[in-house]
Length: 93
Image 1 (cartoon, rainbow, N blue to C red):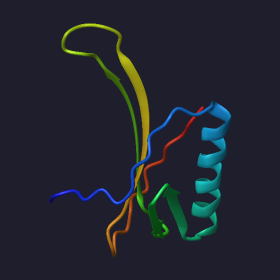
Image 2 (cartoon, rainbow, N blue to C red):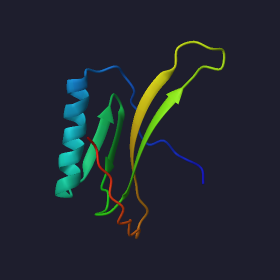
Image 3 (cartoon, helix red, strand yellow):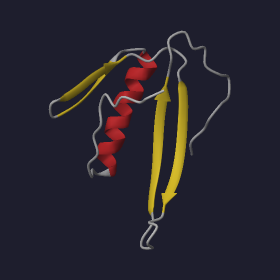
């Protein structure tokens, strides 16, 4: 299935600013509220269901020509209409 990017933003920020952004998203998710992502002329509103799929991925990307590797952590929330979700648990320390 082709992917359509509805919103994308990438910029260097302090850990504190990133934590505040993620905290706002977490509060909206916990309360069941719709949330909006906006940057510049881009904006999208999302309303995840009660049990979306949550994926956490840590990666190391190494340039093919050598050089310094880049580390990343990605948090992804996915859902389809009518999807039930699963009972697996995930923790963060």
